[in-house]
Length: 349
Ligand SMILES: Nc1ncnc2c1ncn2[C@@H]1O[C@H](COP(=O)(O)OP(=O)(O)OP(=O)(O)O)[C@@H](O)[C@H]1O
Ligand SMILES: [Mg+2]
Image (cartoon, rainbow, N blue to C red):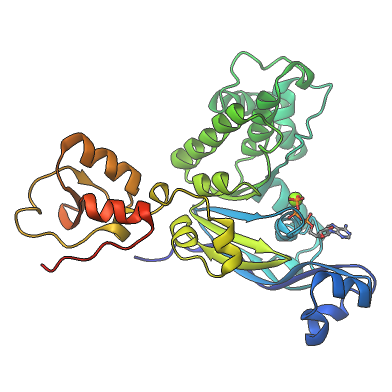
């Protein structure tokens, strides 16, 4: 399978706050200090330390980590809302750090829009005009931008609320307006900085489902910051887990939960039900000839939990099928092995 092209590529990125921040990235001794030692020695905070990754076209790339781990700083460096101290950032192959003010403005207005936790809506404007705001800044005429905004409002489920003011909306509705405003400019990438963390759990789940739906329908590239592991696992195609400014692991939810890179990650994912993340591709065993023709069929990326449901419902071993070919099967033993955290004994074929 070909890897899709990269939207963002980040190499050796550092962001250091504080006096003479420039000297930290190039200095191996300073760079090796932990946060407290570095602050004591230099008065500086290294919010992002030597980070490299690519965001692939069409993926939901999640940046996860505890408070203060550097998530917001990292994502703001992508569009230079925060100026990186050193390193490289490219978008669609173009050097972001070399862009002049005009080019950067165009990047932020047209190509990468941001959705914030605190919605940042204009209180005296209607929902419609808030959503149209980015288009107004772009210089689009009133009739056209209002028409475009109305379409996006319908897309995020705010029909009928066009003329309300933000103060007349619930938190979830306000966040939908924030989302609609970002979508209205039809950006190549949506950047979300913990957009749902102020919402109560049920509304939050609705909004997560909204993001999943939008992503499925439009295939738009998204970079999504969260400190909530469940949110990361639900939304992310890949997750970058940050600790103290570094990425300690970058992988699919299945890789992060199934093979944590170190004790920190292992501890982070300890309570995740594995069956909701591990896929049948990882759990299956080879089929014998009778098994390969009957039983419920599952796609290789179905979760073990979905497979358990199919096996219990039909009472049969389930087949893992891709392009009409049976790749293997999952039975009680393989599925229970995942739940219990022990690999099943592979039977000989
Ligand atoms: N303007 C600044 N000046 C000095 N230090 C800063 C500045 N902005 C952020 N920091 C520090 O950089 C580190 C990373 O901050 P950042 O906001 O990126 O974390 P975060 O992972 O987004 O946290 P949260 O989950 O709380 O939003 C923290 O130690 C923070 O105190
Ligand atoms: Mg933050």
